[in-house]
Image (cartoon, rainbow, N blue to C red; front, top):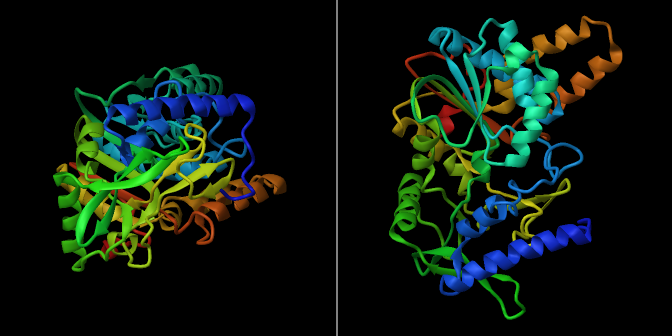
Length: 394
């Protein structure tokens, strides 16, 4: 564990111990080990104990990490600019579904901007599994939005099952999907699992992969036109196509927009990236100990954007575009938003927005690490992906 990590307080440690005991009990009942993906699922989503299910602060400077919407309004305003043509094409019954609403910062700015753009959806639905985050979102949006706008917001427990037309949006969601990890042994595919060691802690063990994971690894090898070397370890989401099908629910015509950090497949599985992309976020620190303090830290893995492209087109959508976050924001009004702020003559506010724009777009910050991918069916995005097209890298 890096020495710089701040220690949790006694209550937090007790919380983590309860979740560890729950996971340990499941390991015992499962014959001595569980897949890493199951361990990650319990760490993040176990009711009342998982990282996203409990009540600790997660987003912003006071939490464990900062997402683009938490930096300020620029990111959400640019996303609204990108999807407004889609919503207008679909007409007054169009809907907007956000997966994982965070603090509510994105919804607040997006709805205000969509109203200005005459592209208000008939319903703004937030698919939020955390009861605590849902309540925080509700309080924030009720306070910051007019009653008329707030009344169009609905919180969902499950994806919309009935037929709907509109936009599905997810920012930093796929990276938090519980991911299987694989490793090659003598040319065979093994799955990383979690067991209990002699000291009662969690330990990594490798078990022969099931048919689904093994086939998914072989598919990646065929696509890369090379085999993974022995001891190569990484992540793979064979369930991604099923997840996409599930979250769109009854979506007929409309668009999907995903923003996350990751790589096209050829870069995700570089030979030198032989330990994978899994990492933990804790109080603005990034480290590699996934077993440290279950329930108190976020666990994430980068996104294989080639796999996302396969999943989206497999669901019957057309790939509309793929580019860096910097290109996406610059192509959807970022410069204009900055000019509007500068025109107010408020130097302090202009500096604040300029710093926000730098964090969103600089290659050393979020600009290149985060990427945007869009899909359409029955509509067009317009100019949303005209800047910096990267589809050739997929």
